[in-house]
Image (cartoon, rainbow, N blue to C red; front, side, top):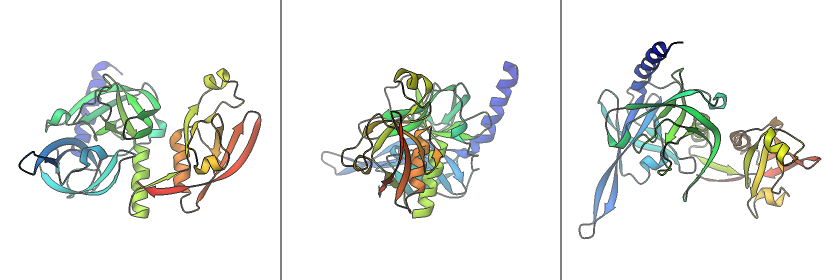
Length: 310
């Protein structure tokens, strides 16, 4: 494909997805020294996932007493926060049925080097803008003072304040992530929450009426052949346990740092999201069965699941 053809294809994709992208306006009470509280306006982005439903970042709407949706054609509607999960930095909003729902892709099929587009309303501008880049890495972990985001997508597409909550789109016109500008000092590096995490968030809200946090008390990192060779690990795939929370179910069942989680509920796990999905699918059961590699020894262990409000 020539550069000219690619340019036309990208322009066509943007035209098709633009009706799905919205600007989010918020009012957040701000204390005044002598006059009580005065609302401060904030802006972010979001996109329609179903008629009347918009997804965005939790930090875009956190603390807001009023949320408005500005659609691409200028139509403005009030919105209600249906659910918010600060740990995933995701929020689901209910608004009027307007605009076009965006197609959702499969973030497990993303490849490094894939061209992506970040669409949103940067710096409070009410007109959508587009930046382009590639997928730089997948499976990243972001740590801030407030949250830890696991399995995020890294991209060099520019993501500025105001872009936060908008879609990261592939060349099929599908949303493969929700962009986040929660790391303000990351210059030239953008991040997006995988769309499959959004799907699980919505499924949780649909099933339980609210987002839940299900955990067993481990922090893990994907294992690769290079790491396996460096540390002389007898398996090439799985999740390396890098931290066990003291007193957690995993700690009580004897899981230690350096263990390799090979499978969960009989399914192999190579990404952090796959372990999280297995744990969340086992909420009703109350435990998850892990196959663990420790040195040359392999064993299975049932680990209790702790469920908390998100």
